[in-house]
Amino acid sequence: MGGLTHLDRTGAAHMVDVGGKASTSRVAVAEGRIRMSAEALEAIRQGAVKKGDVLAVARVAGIMAAKRTAELIPLCHPLMLEAVRLDLDFAADGLVARAEVEVSGKTGVEMEALTAVSVALLAVYDMAKSLDRGMVIEGVRLVEKRGGKSGDWVAG
Image 1 (cartoon, rainbow, N blue to C red):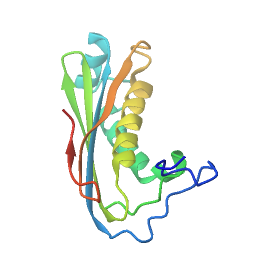
Image 2 (image 1 turned 180 degrees about the vertical axis):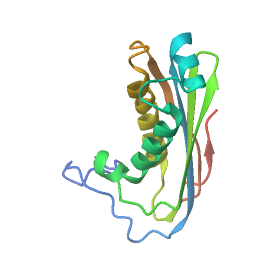
Image 3 (image 1 turned 135 degrees about the vertical axis):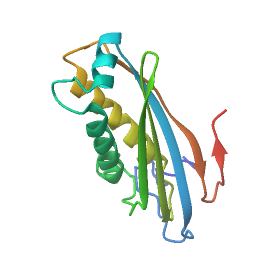
């Protein structure tokens, strides 16, 4: 089982010890999208969804989720995030969510960025499901990470 960082020598799951690692500036960017009907998209664009401002609620939901990632994903370290930016942009067939998360710490923020995007998109679904229950959340992925021992990475 050597090489798997979240398993100990007996194969039991454990949290990785980051105590000896240097604290560095780390950034992660994630994105995803939600496809929906033209009717639902237009209602969001016009601010006509009965539950309220879909974009504002989704943005706050994503930011809150990033801050609570360690409570949601087993073995993630709780982090004192320095910044979470979450943008929702209109596309031809839905919305695109993009989160950028920053921390100075001993472990990265990839999971926080991915969680922010995922929950923001789930909040969009919840807010607009009365207009389109067939919405599709897709393409949630890490697009960039900077800092840390493994250095910088950008999706191809």
